[in-house]
Length: 252
Image (cartoon, rainbow, N blue to C red; front, side, top):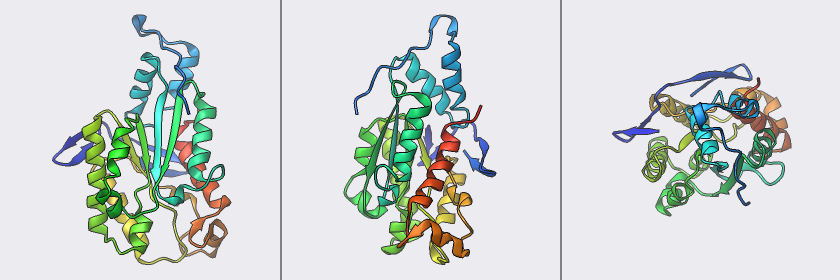
């Protein structure tokens, strides 16, 4: 990951289809080591690498982690919208990744903060994300908390950039993927803030997983079947997790 003038850029911008939508793009155990001699890999290792074909640049860092004989480190961070163990989308995603790659090849940590992006930055919580030195960070950047607590769109995006800058400074090889919080039924201003997050991601070539396309339409009463008091219920967490896993674990 590279940073020019505060903006993140990928060498190649990728787009894949997930659920019919376009997506732009715990102790660790030693990983099985990819053969370094003549760059040969086993069939099992090729199968693992094929699962990462949707990832932005991360396939190479996964391969590097294998070559170094260590598990690939994934960090999922965000608000309470991550959900509780074991039904929350973050925990379902963790289990899905471990099942697909094996616990010897991937380790997944989850960090939850029930604050706004402004509070997150003012309390220097970005240092915790940077210090994790994760290979890949899946970041849900508090957009719903910002909306309900009066943090405007412009300031919200500035705070996100601050977080990304700290991660970049700590390790330029860390891959960050953004994904929004859950949708809400018939909300007015909140979808505009999420649209701005999506536009910001596209303008700065930051991978963005638009899982909203897997939910019912925002004005559909069916949305209420996926939410309880504005937060995802089991059904909501399931559709969210499945979207993320469809991207992170590519079908062969």
